[in-house]
Image (cartoon, rainbow, N blue to C red; front, side, top):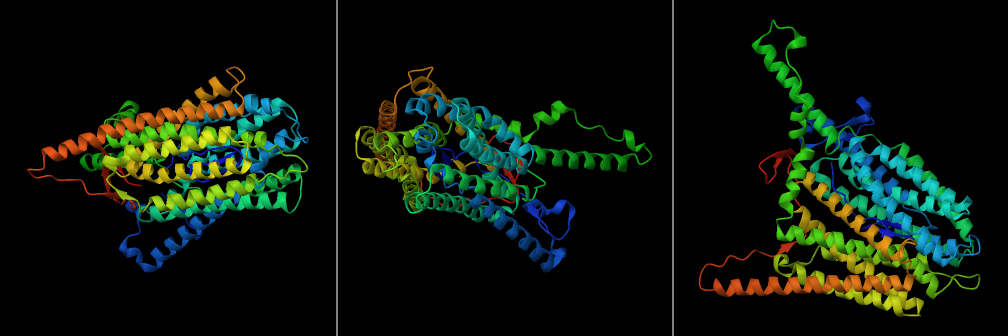
Length: 537
């Protein structure tokens, strides 16, 4: 399964990383209303509150962030996850490779696609915590079915709940921003991401050590995983409940403030008027037209007109599709190349740990790359996509399991190298509200594409290809993307140098190289390109 578009993977994928940035408020263990105190820029403590009050608020949100990061770490520890496919194909479950490839695994993609949009909207509407609880319950259900289930239908239900788990991950990635002031968004985002990466790495190492040194059965390893996810569910019940979120709850607060202000002004003009008739709430149609969510949806139309945003959004959709399809089926490929038996030890956990470590390293390195992305983006994407395609061809044709392992580790590392670059290129010119919406749309479109490819090539109702044939399809997919990217790169580079020659005699202002640096988050109102504004959270 998969941990996260950016966090690492287990037996299959997710994450997608993918629709993620969001919003603010902080835990107050000192007995304030609802146990929270808002710390957004617009509600920061006033100077009259004094240093003790400010220090107390900072201390409260720090403890809240520490607890949330601990939750992220513990909920990522599932030692049995890298070994789910060998478990299903072993004598303990005794499913055939065709059943796992063509009937069980495809359900994950369909479930994820069906649940993704409701999870995204409910995360904001219900303010994160209920969605995290649903994720914890789904995790428990997954491992209970793995331990007790024995039929094909039960395993398909297991994959269905895995799709729910993946879709709910957006709640964790955005929850962290509801606890802190905008000035520390960048820092706490790093904390939350690092805690999940560390959890995935620890989980894979523990699982591999249990299999290699402890010599335990797959069943016992899954029972250990059930204990960890049950503890994660208990932790989710203890999470603080934010007061505000990005779209729905913020809009409600704004409407209440506007209504109160309107009533106050009318009372001043007509103090003798009856309070009940002083002001009528704005009609629902007017509120909807002025809503932040609708403004964001209208703004998305302008995003596709910007070449750089369009390029990296398309990369997110198409390359993440190929990436996660590989993560979904690579464990089946390994089992075919090197079947797990009582006399053969599988090293899925060690490989996942190594790939997570390399992914974290390449993501870190990407922050120091300094080139003219407006000129060289297509070329960089094209070259990396070509290398990934070659690695897929190698994985699909080799009979050596270690070559498969190494190719997989490198494949993931190259993808994770581009993830922070794409995130920066998309987010640097957008408000955080619009950024969240764009990433959500990109992820949803990628999920639809994954489902279509799965239905045609992997599903029993389609071609029902074996895993080696599927990897050949993935290689062709990446080869087509490579040709498109390199052709686009040639056009952009030729156009760039042609314009350079034309302007050589005059003033030639060249855009300075862009570097992946933290994007400053405004504490005031952020203006959208359509002339409307959205208050920073």
